[in-house]
Image (cartoon, rainbow, N blue to C red; front, top):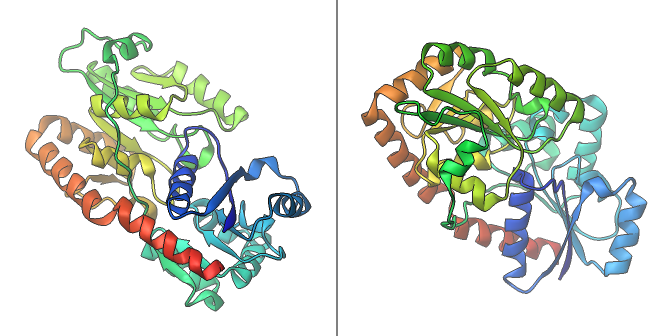
Length: 341
């Protein structure tokens, strides 16, 4: 089949990585997958023209509202993959919620990353019972790359001479839902007590206005550095060299950065929200915090307790291996495509 696949494709973001992986799953069995950025469309009519021009026989959208609304009313069968914002945020917006309910009526199937996401969707749209499937995000094999850690440190203002250096990495696009400023003040206070700890916020500038706010705050915060996006191969290398990966989002679907850190055997500290709690089991596969002060307490504990660090990285790696199989994800999407034939 020729399949149109709509997703938000900002470079080096979780959505873009997920969409590329799913496209590969579909093309592996002979489908032609035409992956397009929803940000490039202003109306459904533009998508209709694309469907005709590309002779698409079916469609898929990542994110029920941002992608699915362009497929509503189209004359080809389609499926939906829930994002995080649609279920955690847009569902509470009455107009968007009504649109999403209609899209689900038309969709042949929908995919949720977790059981809790499925339950939230069914609470709002009970008519979708029987067409929502749960499939955890898979984690692809992460390649080893040649990477100069010292060069990376030189590009920051981190004191490389500090004894026992500990770098906490917060990977996110600069937008409010990711809440990159949540921990800044508390972490900066900790850094003043212990100058060997640093937090690096790393990711693309998604929201220009909010980005300026982040830059201004970080500039005044000791021990916190801000860096732009980088290719995924280099990012994986940075993750492997840092002490821990942090997630401070207000809401998440399923964080690719958290899963990849687990796979790379790097400790994870994540804000205690449903999307994170679905994949991080406190003190077993990572650490969950509910406020900035608790984050600092847990981070200090992790720094000073090598046994805890070893335990959570070992169990985190095993969890990803068991529950986020790339092969299982591939099988699921390849099978679901039969519902579009």
